[in-house]
Length: 242
Image 1 (cartoon, rainbow, N blue to C red):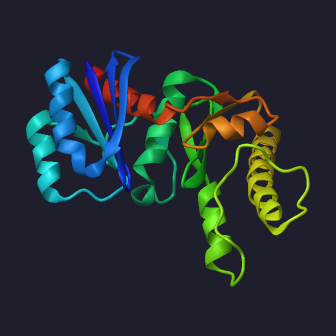
Image 2 (image 1 turned 135 degrees about the vertical axis):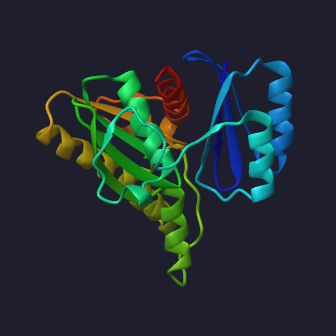
């Protein structure tokens, strides 16, 4: 069995795979990381593991993880199942690397646009030849709400809602429409741009805001909240198969 560890800024996600089948997924605070890993090891016969971290991890915890699992630590030197044509590969986030690896694994020989809607919204394009060119990064939904409050004197701090108001007949509704419709139109426009330039484009939507956005985006997409975890597992397979 494989164990995938994805460390964010405040939370950790883990996933246990039997080959490519996801068996168990957990999310917990970073402070519970080591104890949670020990529990997983007590319940599952883990053969290989991979660690991806976009958040900080102290050296003590990192060494404990290495002692427990000896994982593949994903970075820009890890062997990848695609050709990386990003002009500044050392600055490419490991989360985006994992998403592109997932695209190679799930949609081989296809043009794929992966949209990850979380703290930021990232767009990553992989062509049918397995070549990765890059994409775009923009503020996520929650970041847009926070910025309106933080950089103005009078606008309130709001959070996303499930239903977009029909009209901005109040300041609160105006903010909701501006933020949520803005994100939706941005995504729709980006998809249209890539479709105009690439035939038979496959679009994958993932990240924390997947469920809300999938209900409101009219373009044909494949919504998969676990795509990053699956991408990390595919990198693990690629390294040990080789």
